Image (cartoon, rainbow, N blue to C red; front, top):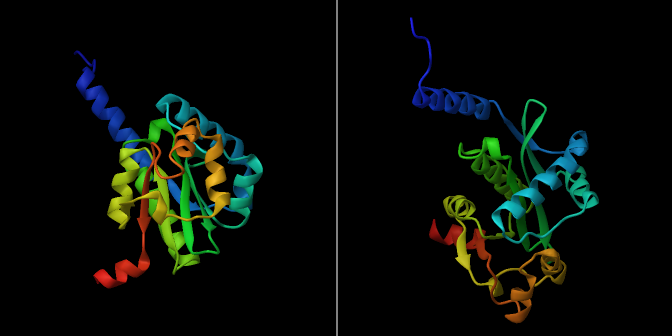
Length: 203
């Protein structure tokens, strides 16, 4: 009896196994227990930016460690294996909050994990800063779609924080010269904003 498996069946089997693995991934607020993942997180972010050819604001290990210690980071784990990450930061005297550094490991992409991480970061932002406007800069269509589902709207950079410390984070991006040339009005990233006051007005 021929027991070989066809290519289509093999792909379906692999997809089923990946979906099962993704369902088992925990998405949680990171703290001191997860400091051992910092180097892996930063390496994953850097490699993803290199492959996509997009800019990214680099963060130091100390910065990511601080986010974890403050309870301002989200980590996704498949058992003990790193699967994804995101962190939040407040700007402009806590009037604005940014969700940044969203990353999902290649083999876990395409199964909704980024959405789970992003939603958890959004909930954390609303919990810690209920009156703040939540914003992000992204070049990724998938992230834009997730943001839209959460209630973000595309906006000009002038509607985002004017906190100089935030914009200094863009200096390590390969596209920073564009931001400079346009006097911080335009870049390759799209600015997106969730305004809790406008959300209440819509209700």
